[in-house]
Image (cartoon, rainbow, N blue to C red; front, side, top):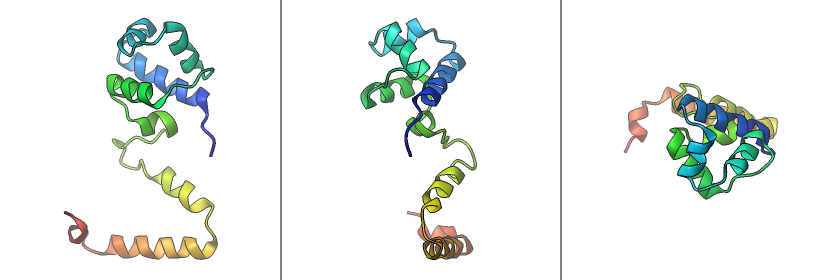
Length: 114
């Protein structure tokens, strides 16, 4: 699955605006140029993992949210991930995954807690 840098940029911009930060404010805090941040938000440039981590920390979002829309604060954040995971599996593997998941759901979860 290829990354959609336009969507990634939109998520970064939305998170920045939610924190009431200007591009100038955010760029200064992570030591990048405003022009580069603007290109990232438009999906025209790619941000490295170090900067992405800094950016996410400042914006209070996860890397998972920025990269694929997964939000661990959402109750159903793994639905998309499970769907993508099993999409490429054979029907036999899908049945096995379902049976394992069902067995876990039907078992007392405290058994697996640390």
